[in-house]
Image (cartoon, rainbow over all chains, first blue to last red; front, side):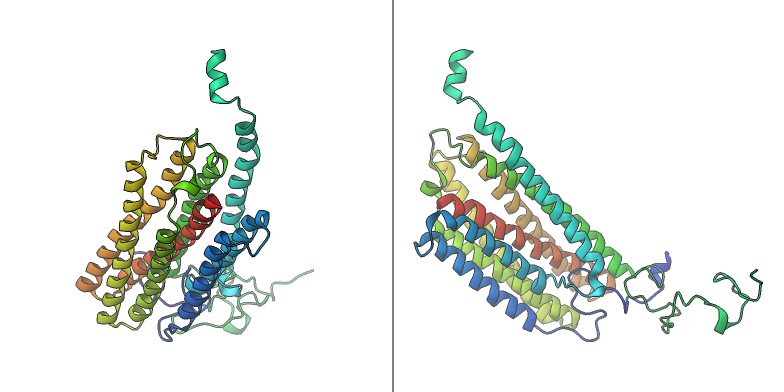
Length: 131
Length: 231
């Protein structure tokens, strides 16, 4: 057996991802989840409403939808996954930050480079004629 | 010139008060004989509970990076419908709204189940996990219905680059949800068979992370695929 199995599953200094408080003695209540659910439902409803309405300038709708989606992802991270800025969460936040960096590079790089390639590609019917 | 009167930090023969002359580990000792770690590398190895959950967190982030590649493909190919139907013709916003609410509620009930489990309440834990599983199945049924309707309309994944990217992205998320529902079933069985043992609780914590992460991916799906695609 490794030495991990000999020590009780209790740390006072670090939080596992998804954990609200260290240890199991003081179990967190449902309040955080309920607040998160209410905020997420509000943001979801706003997204669906904005997408089909004309209250905002039409070309601005995608930007508004993206902002609402990022806000909702933040709500999920904070209230469901309990990722905070506290010192006991440093490792989790750093891993998340690196993940977000890679996601932005993959999506941004693809749209930039492959999007241009796709845009400059000859339409299929013209390509067939030249073959 | 330094003398040997100042012991090195590793000098265990020195008496207790001079064991740590540079005050590197001044957090005191818990009753388990380990110093109280503060998340800065002190106090020896973390417990298995933290290591397991952290490892699973790294996996989830890599899974999200995989999803980002599907999102990127959809972003580039979303407009190439090869003369076929576009998102605005195909997507049923009402069904997507129901799917979204169902998945969000299941994320909430998974959280409530984790609270019940941390209080070692078997009936509530199993009940909330069952609700979570049922909501997951409802989501899957709605999604399979949608896919079946699209294929029946001749808008299957082979129709255009847009539909290939759509089925790859949304189908990949659906597969994850299906795996999550199966995992949920095994977790219910493990709770029934073993109770709230530490190893079962570690797995359940990982399951909760997985389920919440799927909901985060779905936020991206309904925003980019369904709402932007229809606008």
